[in-house]
Image 1: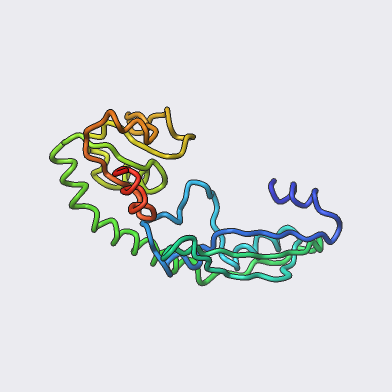
Image 2 (image 1 turned 120 degrees about the vertical axis):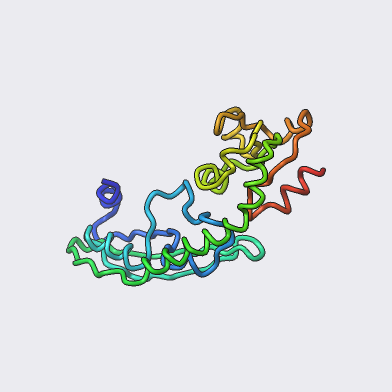
Length: 204
């Protein structure tokens, strides 16, 4: 349905430019466990699977580029930038022999990183000391289902994103950072990418 809408917006022989995460390269640099499986994306592509999708809908590739922009120091993204032209004739799919192995390696790396977090999360679950968790994004939501963080005594979550504030997660309220002034609990920073910045924000 989405492809049909896009085609209806194009002139005959029109061009379609796309940028998507490159799932065939997720295993090359793993800065946070399972962060590439972000909640913003539903379907993931490699250059081959993107060509297959577009080819099935009458597009031919003009160019494709696999980029690795540095989002912040030491944190890289993997992206596909591709241009297609609508020609009407469809093409047969070609098997993607790369992405399956890459995703398997990525999942193994993520699980290894998470094993390093287990002692901290296990201690929190056993001690039941009250904590506040900073961060409610992909990383936290994954840990709540895959680790003993779900058994910890979480009295509140905190997030700088106003879209999350005022809601609840795992039965606890999501607060704005300013609301921490009334809390004395230890804070668990649930972020690989921004933990230094969040720590500084808390201390200030």
